[in-house]
Image (cartoon, rainbow, N blue to C red):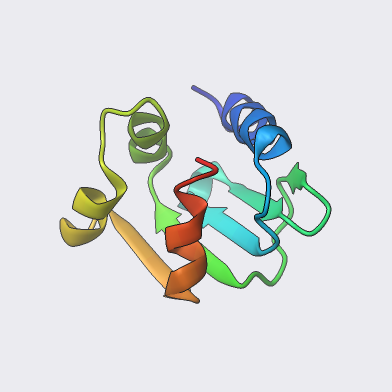
Length: 96
């Protein structure tokens, strides 16, 4: 899966989510970034300041969105790192 297809998947999920009014950046290292602005329900590949930044590999993100990797397990195993507001990351589970 490419960054573009991941961005499209996130965009679809954010469009149907309600009540998420925060900014989150997924940092996939050299593979790029996905920036979610819940204030206006936009998703881009910008590298802006966010309430919460989640760092992980693109491969693990794909597994997580497919339901093959539990976010809590990924965090405990060090496959997912969170900086910023942990509460925002927990609310994100209803979107992703």
